[in-house]
Length: 444
Image (cartoon, rainbow, N blue to C red; front, side, top):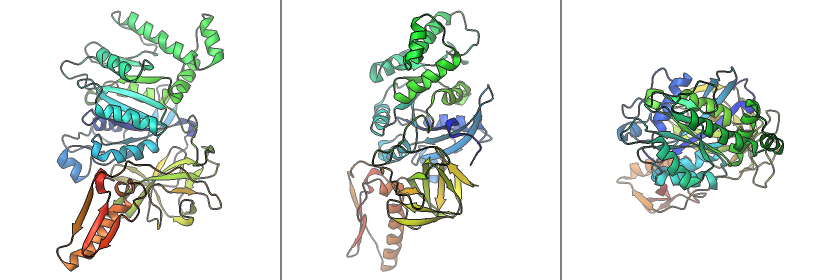
């Protein structure tokens, strides 16, 4: 899929309360990364993430959408960024759970005008329950009236802990942001504050390694490489949650956020993923293949698309894999890198990548794909219990068969699979089709 080492892959999920600016931030990232030639807008119906008719009509995210792009840092290092925009409404929380299972880092978006909300708490708990120790927070909405970056940071620290520390702070007029660890000249009004904040970050970095803490206590200055290495380990272990400031519509803070993603976020190598038996999964391209199907979409042209997150080894097109969850072999034809509704064929995918595979015969959400001859099984997705039941009745005999086909497609999607195994979701009883668990809302 690319010639970038696995160590330089950053896979993260964008989460948060509805209306906090997740999709707006996603569109700003896509525009900056060159994936889109214009700045998309959910309100105007031009977002690359909210591209379906339902989302355009309601002006909210209903489905999770995955993107991949390449980013070159100011120092010249190249990274692959794989990120997923998720819905904020609780009705579609199954998509958030699935996306969190496919990432190394949870990026939680907080609107400065609203502060920490119910959806913020839900996203934080989702990260903890799904083992996402690596987390970051992005504060948006600073261009709204009566907002304060310092007040929002204080609220975040009060709720989630003092280990949530800013690495980027906005200028007083919100015309730009300052990277605390950067080497740019500081405004005199902020120099003392930023110098103090930088000292706190250096101390956090030193605490991750005995050698660094000894050097720090001895009064010796840590090198930029030592600081970066220490903070990466602190983020991966959950001991440090970086806070960023960003005004997506104005493009303020977007570059600093991308730089922070490449510097601080965990890679597939940094975070140890394990199979259902607790054995570590080797993220090296030459290791045994291990991939989890976390999402399924019914494409009008290609049929069912299975979205696979690769945790180890290499997944190649025109190959044969083993579905360890069903005990059957599957033929892989094409691999597709999907950016919104744009699909690009790729030859292979390695750890950290997310690709879509069309026309698999008996592979569904929660199944593990591995090498033929291997028996690796990754812990499947676990969704909340259904809270509602629905039944559909056909008006005519002709419509009855059509309903059966349509409901079967729905059940094969991530929305239906989210309800623990779903048993026999669609059961025919006389002239009624009963759907058990279409509860958490129909979502891809």
